[in-house]
Image (cartoon, rainbow, N blue to C red; front, side, top):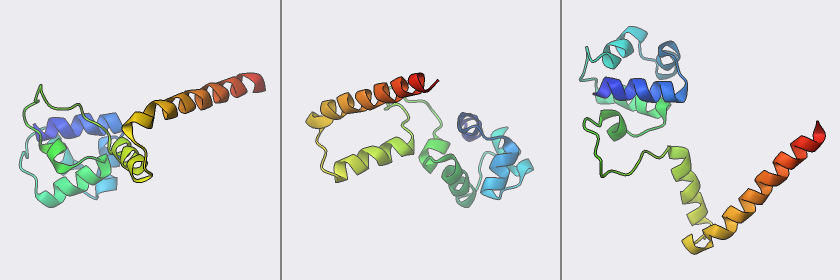
Amino acid sequence: MIGKNIVELRKKRGYTLSELSKLTNISKSYLSNIERNINNNPSLEVMQKIAKVLNVDILTLSKTVPNQDAQPYIEKEWIDFVNELKKLGLEKDQLHQYIILIEFIKWKNQHSKQNNF
């Protein structure tokens, strides 16, 4: 199952096996063996390298049984963004105000692009 998780995450991130190999400094053949579950017990060091490049934690890579009750996967960038908003003092009940602002900025940017053509 680890191999399947790595393949799915690698493809989701848009990496080829060769690219993942270069970014993790792990041989392409070894990564291929992990992805095809020929080697289904990679070391913690290997898992950490892969997790770092794929921007997930090791538990996400080693998840063996999908849990129907589990929260959906959220990319680390979104978690970091929300944590930064919390550090800035944003409260949940204020979120709606910011959504309106973001929608306005998005509309303005789209409208500006249309007028520039």
